[in-house]
Image (tube, rainbow, N blue to C red; front, side):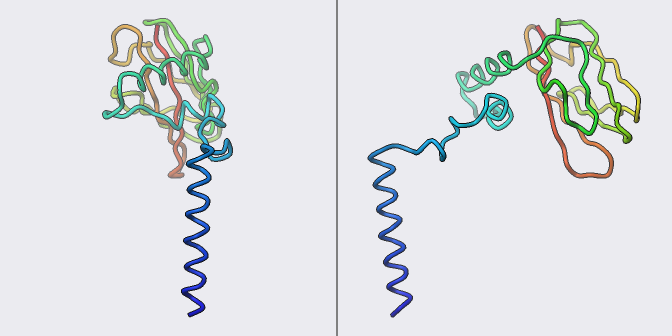
Length: 154
């Protein structure tokens, strides 16, 4: 009997919260709109089922966050800058000034290894044509943790 009372109270509470959200909208603390642009860029990755509008918005956000340059510090697989803007054909230097090897998977091009206290220089093309937003995955040491960044080629 006591269990039925608890379940009934829980159901009524859930219905009340649901109705309130329906009438008043989602509170900001439950909304993705409270994310920073950087968080939104990395959370809202387009997939093969994304609409053209979703892909366009993602690329626009990447352009807003992109920093001009030719170097990415990948020490500890924390890319700095998270989004690099380069001109097509320019060289990009990936700098690993950490104490462990870093492996990069750049787009669909391949996997590259950057030894500790070393650099990797690659031409900004990565099998693309025109303006492109290329993602790269970073893996360091024996950890299963991975991080990623973007290269905006113009």
